Amino acid sequence: MELGLVREIGSKALLAGGGALLLYWTFTAVKLVLSARGINPLIKQFFTQVAAGRIDAAYLLTTKNYRQHVNRKQFIRYLAGLKLNRFRNLKSGRPRLQEGNIILTVKLIAEDKEEMPLDFTFIKSDDSWKIERIVAVNN
Image (tube, rainbow, N blue to C red; front, side, top):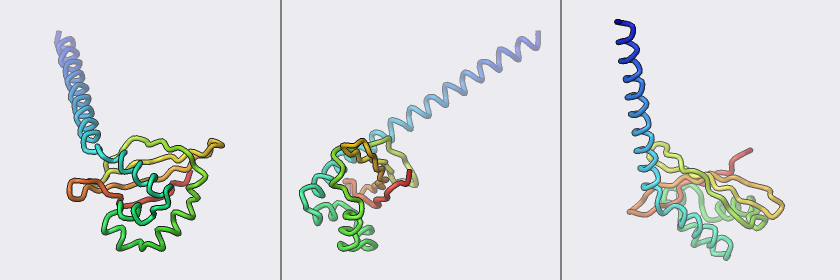
């Protein structure tokens, strides 16, 4: 009889633990999605500015800290090195939360189906998102 009681309590504890884990995961996912609102329009604005040749406008979408470490010439050289004109479409991945920042991998897609992933790190500054870092991801 004691073995049956232990199994019943164990299965209830396992179900309760699983439910708590599911609730925590759901809460965290909803919190991340709500906090990341505004990032996709920023990405679109960034690439629209670059495509239109308004590099200074794209540069101003970055944080003050980024601009202190990467000057305008370095920014232009970095973008030129990426050869963005080959790519026609982009696909954004799932945002990741790391140390209060949101990291989003954006895959640029060329007509020949070549992909180039870029990791964008975003920081919320004065109630708006700014780009803190742009890094090409090695496949």
